[in-house]
Amino acid sequence: MNLDFLYNMNEGPLRSGLIVLGVALVSVVVAVILHRLGTALVRRIARGHPFTTTATEVAYNSGRTCLILFMLRLVLTGAPDNTPGLTSISYLTSVALILALTWFLMRCVKSVSVTVVKLHPYDIADNLKARRILTQTRVLSRSAYFLIALLGLSFVLLTLPGARQFGASLLASAGVAGIVAGIAAKPVLGNFFAGLQIAFSQPIRLDDVLIVKGEWGRVEEITGTFVVVKIWDERRMIVPLQWFIENPFENWTHTSATILGTVFLWLDYSVPAGAVRAEFERLVKTLPLWDKRVCVMHVTDADQRCMQVRLLVSAIDSGSAFDLRCQIREHMIGFIAKNYPHALPRLRAEVEARNDADALDTVVAGSPKESLG
Image (cartoon, rainbow, N blue to C red; front, side):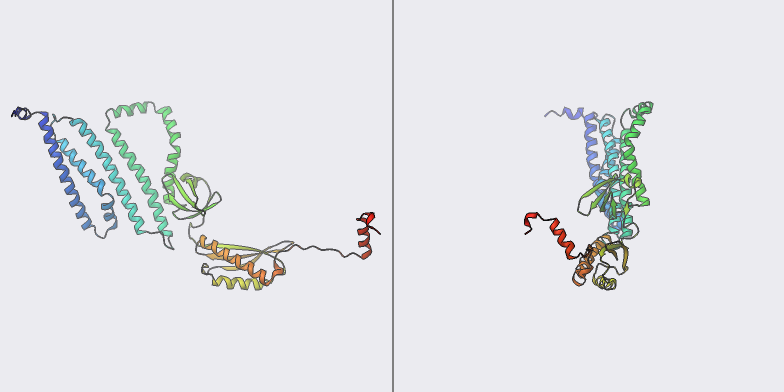
């Protein structure tokens, strides 16, 4: 058997490549073992700390990838210069390490967001504080995603050969190009800064009840560029973030979800207001949707035909107020129609009495002559 190739491989590039490959495989195994041991140790130490525990779960894969690429980068740094493809492999490993670190940072931000959502559930009755915190968390986390991705891309571009020359050429032609880029990026930047403003000033929050362009709905989602409003009939309205900064809108749950609801009745002047008020108060006390704050009846208007009666009640939220108004309206109309049918709105007309002679003349004047005997 000819073993001359082993002698030729002693000090050649093939020998260096095999050694580097073997060390790289060992480093990958060591990195995986160290990552598992480190994760187990952190979980044991951070037991009872939700943020750290969630981070070890959400960022597990990204952290392992970063550690593996870091160990490979150390191996390539100490590799002999005659290793085949050393320059290309080192460059690709560096780019991959930057992308992995970017991924790791984004997962860390995700872990914080997930932990805040767990600690502040908003599917409860009094969820104003939870919705405020969740809105800030989601908007700020999406802003952090954008900044981390931008930094990661910047570092990757800096590793490209000739990147500085490319940047210098861009600066040289930054006159018209800068204006065009600024105009093109205005909606993106506008929504980005609008998101930050919404996160801190909070004109809207998750699950807020809004009236947007005449539509009633709830804030279902706040992204980095737009807000999803779920309308009462399950349609979705997509509104840019910047719109909420530049346009007026109604927020029915800005400080509290409680709201007043009105029922208007148009009744005849002959209706006994005291009896209607007594029945209204009795009815409201039996309805579970009433929150026991406001129950008032007023005659708010009157014209030549009828008077307007306003029944004012309170409820814990707008949905309950709508159902409560419907129940009150249905019952009160039935009560009045059954007990005081004459009190329903009607059109009055006055007919003057006329004597028989005038009536006969009118008949004769309006009849054909042939019909007269």
